[in-house]
Image (cartoon, rainbow, N blue to C red; front, top):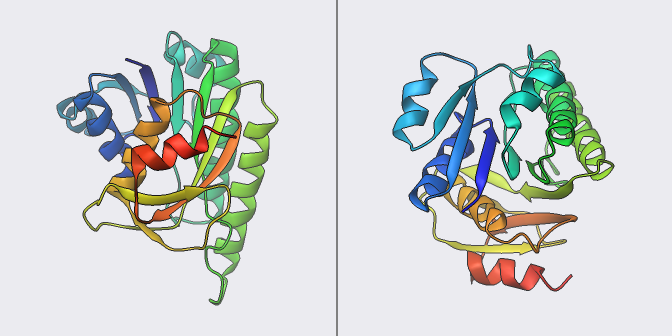
Length: 218
């Protein structure tokens, strides 16, 4: 069982992941910003860890991460504006990578953005900035000394998960329930042989376990 540190644990994907990992008896430490989030995370089976990635120093976050085997970064500004996107999706990821390196956490999984998101639509300045920041965040993690995996899910939905996905290095764009994104993240945590890969993810026909087994060939 892995000791997991989740950044963005109170979010829609993060909370689902917390529950799934706890159900599988993994040890989950869940970073949260608001005091009222602690009870929800504890009920989901996590050890709540208070902290704001907009306020923490590298040293402070590294101390919180110490002793964990994997960091999952699924935090995001959620369309709350350019400044917040830069602070969380950009600077927050930089902080988390530096802290993981300092703390000696070997593995880092990042939830990023599908490169075709927004294609065929009118692109706002905020969305263009979001995609730019996500791309730079991916590059920051790839350049680190960590065993990284970048997961790029398609459009997220709140539909019930099916447990079936399409996952590969390059696939057509599509939707995917947040349940299945969380289940894929849990599968990646349980499949340490998958590393140094950028994986695109949508709904599909393959069971998640089968899709991840295929990715071990690279």
